[in-house]
Length: 462
Image 1 (cartoon, one colour):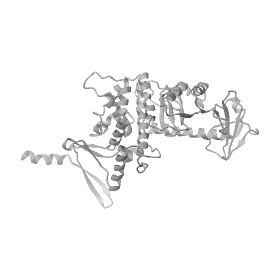
Image 2: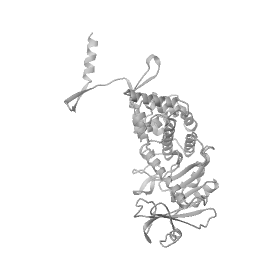
Image 3: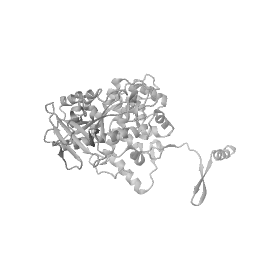
Image 4: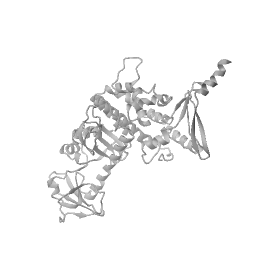
């Protein structure tokens, strides 16, 4: 009896009261603790089911270089899947992935033994080499394999940008040009399929790399690794990719392309106010001209836009011709495609910058970095894999417009839940309140488990 009476007093001692203001005056909230296995990310069960359907565990097992010798070591695929899950949950550092260990049920929800510690994650990424990253890069063509073929082909966009690392001690971090001036950074190459908004290839490079360094081989590898049923109808790139090596690589692959040409003195000589070759277009303030070019089968299109009418126009201002911004394009599109249409087709390339921004801000690439250069690239490949899988998940659910990861977290993944095993059966009870919300969630679950071509569920957009 003495022991049974002491338990409530012990529990009472662990209770804390917090005071809050309400419209009716002061109120108190009692704070205590529970040993129930709770998770803040019960909706990640949807993610785990999606990964199972995509055979992601098997794909990772084929490309990971780890061969643990200890019987007590983590399964490398569990470490990678835990890292993938952490990125989707919002982790942008290894320490924040490891912090998910404090979530009592996230490991069984993700289908892994446990979330690895920060030291284990650091050792995991420390063993990667260039050949291992090349195999990881092969995961992206496998992701886009789910896409249907298109008669007109897909558009492949190329870009390069600076990943700042102010501390500057990681391998490959060098002083390079950024929008903030010369800063320590990495300079990745990325290739994206424009229509489905998916990533087809990624290379990490040293921060002092020029935009064109390795770009020709990167283009060749990306295109040759794509599934055979996905044809590339057009390649687009900014002036950094207008180098002869990249152009020749595209031509050897039999690709149509549009690259921004550098405004050399020869091209600038074409930018004259009184030249009758300028053709007005139906776009106010925009004029174009096509000029003879020295390479057979290649066209040079020059565009000028009046700043007063088009203040947001891209391009470069020339001191000799005030009031305009100029752009030039090299293309091998046939003459049937008008100069204005060439400009319009190129403009869609800017959407790749939105993918880069999302990868940096929401999938953590800006801050996911380890001391080993190839370990950093491996981390980025996992983040890109997570991004592609999120796009495929939305396609599976019938979403016509791809929404951002923050919306997926808010509506799907970040759902409090209780994990239990009544009668030995693993059970996850999601905290979804209200009949309408529960019906919507059931539709999501049914859609995920259904065969293709079922009706879409309601929009995931916030």
